[in-house]
Image 1 (cartoon, rainbow, N blue to C red):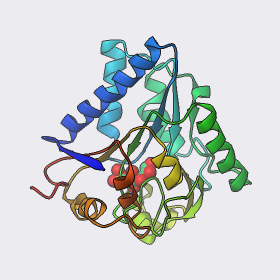
Image 2: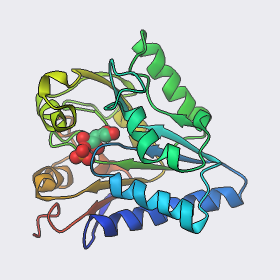
Image 3: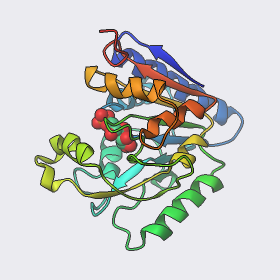
Image 4: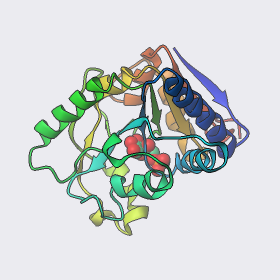
Amino acid sequence: MSSVVIHRDAQAAAVAVAADIAAIIRERNRAGRAAVLGLATGSTPLPLYRELVRLHREENLSFAHVVTFNLDEYEGLPADHPQSYRHYMEQNLFSQVDIPRASTHVPDGMTGDPAAACGAFEKAIADAGGLDLQVLGIGRTGHIGFNEPPSAKDTRTRRVALDDVTRKDNSVFFGDVASVPRAALTMGVATILEARRIELLAFGSGKAGIVRRARNESPNAGCPATWLQLHPACTFHLDPASSGQA
Ligand code: F6R
């Protein structure tokens, strides 16, 4: 079962999720183990990353022993491309905290062998001991990561074609839809569901319809976020608008 918390606004949600992440990092540090975090990109987690950077600067939260795995990367974008998700993570988190780059993993959108790269990504997650916590956004197609409909519950990290709705939504970052890559590498639904804890963030009225579907439809491949209902510790962090209350 997934649970829902409706926060006052996106900032309040970001503070709450950052506090959960900080607690996991500190608890793991005390136990002498690395915290393994699954991370998302896009507009939604930006306030979360700002809050994590603040905790690092002002409250001594160290990322020195944190290991991260990002959900996805566009195919064909090099790491230094301004719209690549590696670049996004560098800008918004990695360069602003003390995480060793070798501890950060983003699927390689430039690989010549996607199947091998995706297999290695899965193995790296397993070798790290699995994801302690996965941060998610949700796309208007119902995608989590870039698991576009239809995405089955047993899907693993793989190359996927991006939905036209997603390419149009993400064209705001690229200037025009033609510049948005047609494919990506994404962590699979099964990989996401294996995280010990999942925190999904969704803000604004534009997400209200898909959040309603994700929570109310029976789990199905046509709305991949519905699979989250099967997870024992998944929380939807909403604002009044995405919850349908505003
Ligand atoms: C990003 C990702 C996507 C986004 C989703 C929402 O790494 O995997 O699933 O979370 O497309 O994007 P925003 O937050 O820009 O609305």
